[in-house]
Length: 351
Image (cartoon, rainbow, N blue to C red; front, side):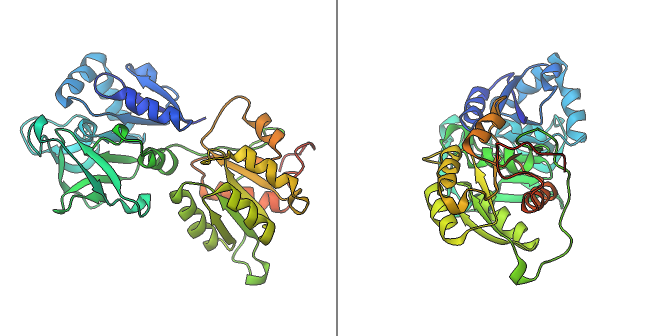
């Protein structure tokens, strides 16, 4: 189960929490060191950076967060949170977490009345621009060699960057309805994936297939997911592993593709737009030619009844996002070889 913590000492933490919950991600407010227990990632929201630092010190969280950042906890800082992540500030005073190799200037655009909104090109999120809200925003003045700049203003100044498990944005994604950056943080940066057999809950052994296949022997994998980041990963990574990959963002289109192409495995997201993945799975099972095709859910959705719901829909297995690449290949190989029984009504043995 992936849990994202949101630092809730000051600022717009509620908006982050509500956006995560709207995506089906378990989110918890962090006010004490104990609140970090069981958290796989942390969002530090926008607010007043000096106030947040003072509250971190009085709550005893500052040293804990510095240690957790050094240990590799995924952290996303938005606006004031980006200031807290920075190794260097352009003015007097020590940075807070000193975790990310960037230099940040506070209030780079002036006072509150100078706040603005603009569309940004963020290639990792696809071709559509991201509508960004800047409120008394900072700017990234310089980046170290290990930092990847994700977005810039038209004048070239960086406003979003990533360094390993750390993500920084000068703007407020939580004030829009666009969940792509939150999905990127959860699915591409945070946590370890978990895989298990749908019927018995046995952890799936990590195992990659041995070497490239001949073209005529390449199994076909159909990926149905409305997140272009996930589809891009599925196509580029799995094709490199020797599979023939078909992708679609639409569930009903996925059914038509499956009927025409007869894939060997279907990877299906639960939280699709329109009909849910559960509904699509049921419709796939109604097709005689697809009745025994392995269908594996890849999803951030989690609940105590997840396996039962998936089994009732006709799924073969469940793999939680973000999917570890090695495990994803292992799951595909195991269902291809019948080591997870395609019929959800049958019990399965350990792989």
